[in-house]
Image 1: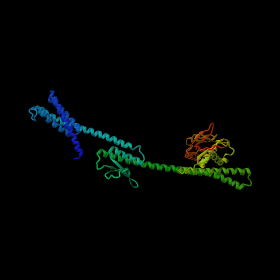
Image 2 (image 1 turned 180 degrees about the horizontal axis):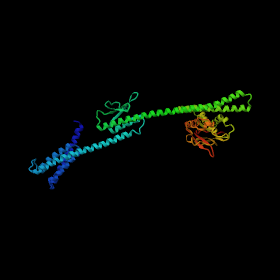
Image 3 (image 1 turned 180 degrees about the vertical axis):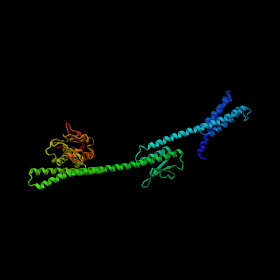
Image 4 (image 1 turned 90 degrees about the vertical axis):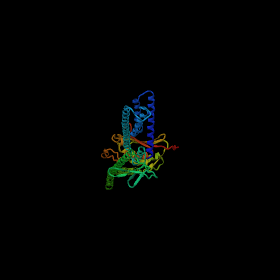
Length: 475
């Protein structure tokens, strides 16, 4: 006999004895008060019911019934204090008492067991619901497995480990010195994913714990299968997005390279074939057109290279202390031919402002902003570049007086490959990388860049950079 059985039997015996003694005490008290044995029998009947309820077993109720019968006969039937019965009425009374006590005790015990089973089933149902719903918001293989092990510990009381059969069997968080365990398969609809190990310390799980463990194993299989499908969909989506970007870039580059190359070829051929017959002004015009196309091609190639470095997460900054006047000067020298006779103003701080930045990349940002302003405005529209030193930041604004940003692309102006549909038909070339590169470079410097409407007309591209405290005033 196990320790648990002996403990439960002893507890039930004590409860039965206590109830019996209370019933005897009450019956003696009632007898002294002159109460008849027909009413005293009800006290013993209640004692039988209490015994069945407290012990949870009809056997103890039956035992209580027989002992109550004996004590009733001994104490309250004539002749008293003997087990002899002379009266047939007393015999009938005690027989009916015994039948009533046994039946009521048995029915009460079974009813109590049914209630306990119902409560246990309700608790199990709640646990299974919590288990099923608890996996829904969890994503990631390790998180799913960790959640399953928490459920096993919380609801079944066992330490556990999950061993997956992927490239090789690998167990998550298995105890090092644990050798006794029960194994439950984790199987999806298509294949066996692994097994759930329950470290039971040679203790067999009860039916409820067994059901919970099996339910957790099933939910683990469903969640891991769902995670596998999600990862497959993500890989497919990323591959499709990468292919779409590659196709877009190749298509845009091929189109935009062909146009300036055709112009360069035509101008070069015209110069070569008619150099002597062309006037000086015509040759100068052709040379300036070729120079503009070469500048555009150079910027295009530089932007593509920068975008490749950004996409591959290889954008490394080589920060040095740069004078903002020098950066502006370098940017203007690259696009001076594009500006031609366009109204253009530059406002720089009166003092020398040093900024910790990658000078080459910052020059590229200004070139892209100025080139955008030139390309998307009429030749007579004015453009301004203003640099303002603020408390802890440097603010650079490139503003034009054109028609402003098209509302269709205003919210995504800094995304890759964002261009207007009319850009091709009206000769305004662009593959939509310039502003995306500007934002990536400015973000890498810890700054910000935004697009604002310029009053009364046009657009202002405003970027800010964190400013070092080292400022040298011109003396």
